[in-house]
Image 1 (cartoon, rainbow, N blue to C red):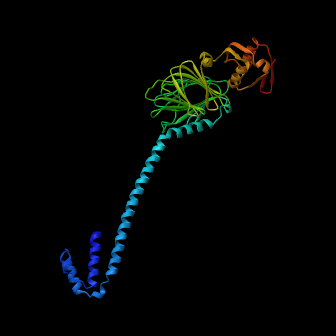
Image 2 (image 1 turned 120 degrees about the vertical axis):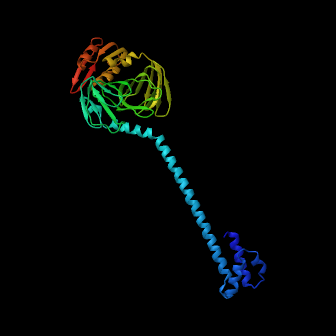
Image 3 (image 1 turned 180 degrees about the horizontal axis):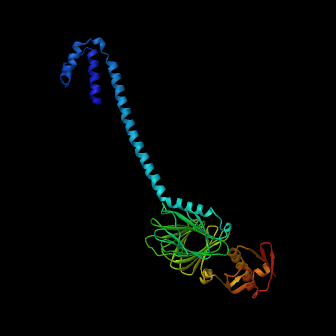
Length: 369
């Protein structure tokens, strides 16, 4: 029975109580004969039209509330589903950021100055490697050091990240599972997956690293660090970003896009040097790339660098505190240094072209006029 019929029935009962003539009203309703029977068989005083009307009204209200409640439930469920979809979308959109944070957290776990040997850290163990070690990963994520395969239990997570830490005075080389090659300098670290998965290839670097990225136009290669994000498809470039120093990115060949912490972007062409300080791009200029990548061959090229600049690099490479008098620190030096020699031999080599005195105190070296 719909709302209209409820009110019509209530009106009829009201007329019954008022003793009005109801013949026409009864005959026009399908239930007329039934109503007439009940009227003639029941006592009128037992029929309370106002009570019927009130109960009818309450039933209608109850039905209306139920309808609204169902509507609210459906609406709430729709809103909840929409929120869930939004949250899921945001999660997957920001999954990359979550990984970034994890990589940086891994890198912060161990300081390169606290290890004495080239150190490879996997999910299963920590390995001390020889100087100039060559670590190579297969496409399946298996690792070999100097052609010797490291036997490990089957890796459950193909995206497991490893970390390579190189201490003072040493270097190491890595070939990642995609064929990308890295040379990692003294006091540096790299965090990378045993095997790349998904649509991007991503690693984290700190210190100084030279990269020769394997070309893959379907999967861009991303290098992240504390102050920047670098994106390439395939190229050669050098990154220097030691703690407490400005970041230099030098492109040897190809093309890279760098984004600083302020979302400012720079596109590099071959022989470009990009300088980043405190997370912001400072300048971009053309340079002789040989000066910035000669360390790969254990050589430091000097093309008019000041002594202060040279000893800053030597301090990082050898892990020794070297200081010099400002009067001699501003002097320019030309030539090349063999970084395979020990620090004493290197400083004596510089002394042959630039007169200064050498003083040693505890673990520090002082160069005076």
